[in-house]
Image 1 (tube, rainbow, N blue to C red):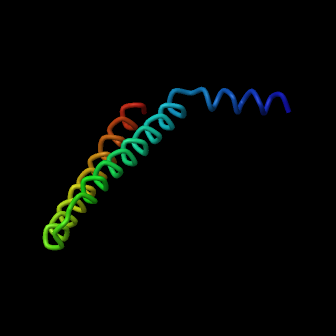
Image 2 (cartoon, rainbow, N blue to C red):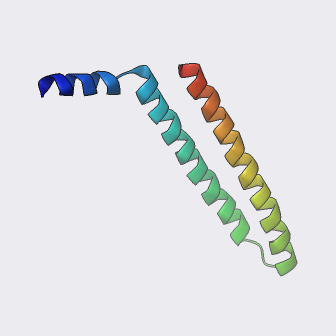
Length: 81
């Protein structure tokens, strides 16, 4: 049992494992923060036409940001290995 625990601890403390976890958590936190900021900007629109136009632009920005975060996270992950 102790041997299994040591193997698990050795696995968890590898740079590849905790580095991957840190990168994924940081990408998720940045995604949540950015979405909250964008939603606050969207809620300030008063005109319906402007609201639809803003919604389209915001969805485009969210998608670009999402893929940019994925690409940056993948670059950091590949750098670990």
